[in-house]
Image (cartoon, rainbow, N blue to C red; front, side):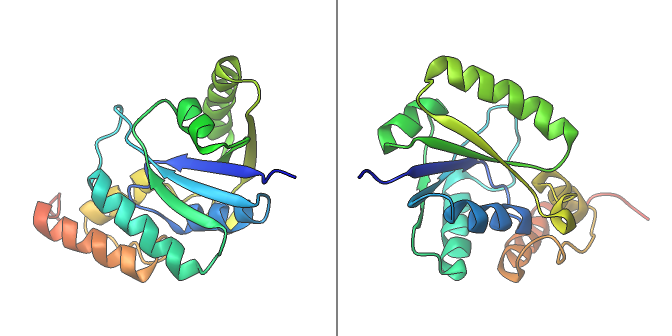
Length: 170
């Protein structure tokens, strides 16, 4: 019997508690879960790919889940999934706006390869408002992001903000 391999792709800039929740839950649905850390040309990342990859690897290792691995990729998702032998793409949903975008992406991905299914996991209710984009914005304006990310990620972001400088004046 072949193993069910899932891919959870994202930029993870930075990885949040919401991402960690989806990782834990997705890992229970597949035999092997690959966290695919990628680039997105429409986003302006705070951390480069190597930094995000290292951050996600550290966070996943701290979760102590045996069937999860972290891989960087810079390719079409469906080609990456096929190369990894995946049969499932995992996507997290926070709100209706996420669903509309993800639904369209799932349809496009199905057109590219109809043998790979997309599975949507709803974010835990307490984590639904968390988005990497908002975490970065809060941090850049001097706010506390401790409720949205692990302490190690909070430190990574604080260090980067110190390099960039806090925005705004009061």
